[in-house]
Image (cartoon, rainbow, N blue to C red; front, side, top):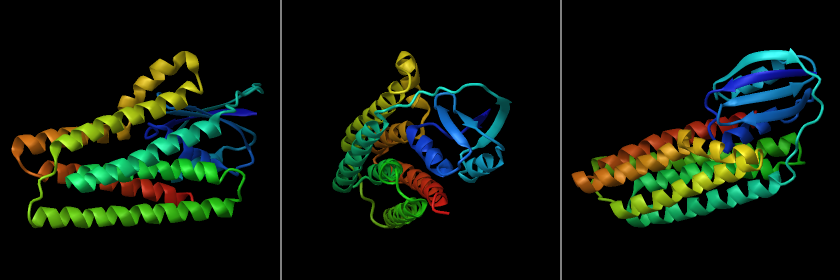
Length: 264
């Protein structure tokens, strides 16, 4: 058996881990996958050649690059029996905040919150596909991924249209306090999700791994909406909200294309 280490430069939260797991699902030569999210590394234990595995990782556009391959005698792997329960937990949190941010975003007229809600929905799709496709056929998984990807793109395009309408039309000043408060709670939710998932893998290093949440895109987005809320109040203009919303919509579409790659 062989042990191959990959550097995944864009793997900064559990949703990317699940994308990789789904992409590599069905490759019979894989014996075990060991994810190190804080260090952005993936260790693949496999039989035979690594070519198919390497090609699949490159197709996800997550910056996958092979570091080393060597033979190993390791046979025992720790399996997390509670993984399905934990996935349900983070799915519920992400979907709940999708509803909360979408609702408060529409009420407060904040494009930033609406866009961040779609980012939460994107993560929900990834966890959902992981759960509902377990034990299912490859065709079933691909169909779910295709529907999720196109739905995500459609919502992001609608968001872009709204950004243009507000940019060139009458200025709607969002409620900055709602933007800041809701984003702080979303930031806490993202931290809880990563902490729970990482704790399940290594209790001894949980506090260290959870601190790496501050390198993830989700937290950067949350902080971006908070800063935008401050600037909206300070400058008395909706432009900061529109800018952060546009950035997040772009990230959502990028995530949607990664999901669509699972359907090929």
